[in-house]
Amino acid sequence: MPALVLVGLGTFLITIALALVFFVVPAQKKTPLDINSTTVTETYPGAVLVGKALASNTPTDLNSDRPECRAPAASRGGDAETVAGDEAQDTEVKFPVSCFIDNDIPMYSQRRVQAVEPSDADVITLQAAQSLFREDITGPTGVEGLINASIDRVTVDRVDAMPIDEAVSSLQVVASSGDNSAPTGFVREGLQYKFPFDTEQRDYDYFDANTFTTNPISFVGETEIAGIPAYEFTQVLGPIDMWSSIRDHFAKISDGYDPAVESVLASYRREGMTAGQWGLGGDPKREVDMRRFYTNTRTIWVNPATGQIVNGTENVYQFFAEDQAEAEAFFNDKAAMEAEKAEPTRTAVRFGSGWNEETKEMTLSGAQETADTLNTFGRIAPAVLGVLGLLALIGGILLGVRAGGRKSEARA
Image 1 (cartoon, rainbow, N blue to C red):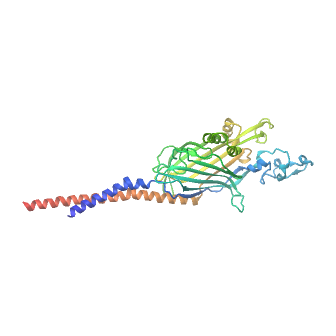
Image 2 (cartoon, rainbow, N blue to C red; image 1 turned 90 degrees about the vertical axis):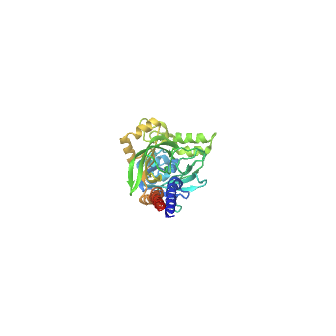
């Protein structure tokens, strides 16, 4: 009887161990449906072209005292005196673009990702509200310092984190001047807010929400962050013509002309200004058609067991250029880039930073908890149960053999 009990117990324990490995753990390897996380970057000096100032021909407060940003009084019927920048919009003076670019201002980025409907056993819809702020401007509403924002929504597989092959993704651009609604509902390719469970050491496709493009992100190597295993991935983008890429995106999902698309595209193309205003060489009176170009060096660290991103940095630089060739020549000219950083004449946005310490600690804690759970049910528990089950099974068999031997001796 004891032998049968041990054999039964051993079989049961081994069955439980196998069930954990082949059924329970795979069921645990799904993105949880209660995701609600916020990532905030460190505050870091950057630059931004203030669209309202450019549109109204009013030099910004930070630039209003610069000589080139003050209009001659003669242009207003006066003499050789000058007028402050806040009165300049009444003149016909064409100020250089540098008068509308605030440089070396404190900036930070914030993103909140949460699970929304539709979500079920197989898929999860993630909504990400991303905002870029300048910290030197505050007010009662809390959004006075808003530079730009977006509301992104994507439905992904809960295991491999890839978007589903349906036109359900949306990306709404929110400018500091208000909400620019445009056609939504498109098929998205590439990872974005999470990597698959059991992330591999290889390149993945990664979606960039600034340009609506999908590009490879490359595996760099293994490391540890606060004792947690992590894979490092890097993506170098640009210069990408933002006006063209965003226009092409909307053309794919919208039939015919949509005025809202023109509203979204307005800040990505500037016509009717002169080369001199942009600080370009050649005839300063030459009219130029300038488009905004985007570059970014993105580095992220992923916990391979969970696919959770545990740290990230981005170095975003957006600037205006006449065409692709001129954009690449300018961006690859180190001297020109250093001069532009010090005294910007064509910068749209310059911001590079990484997650702050609070964000990293919170994210690492969550990743460690998930990894510990998977390790417990995927390795430790099955190993212990398997060993105990095997011992019980062997013990039961040995007891059974001995009992059978004693019965044979008794008959003899």
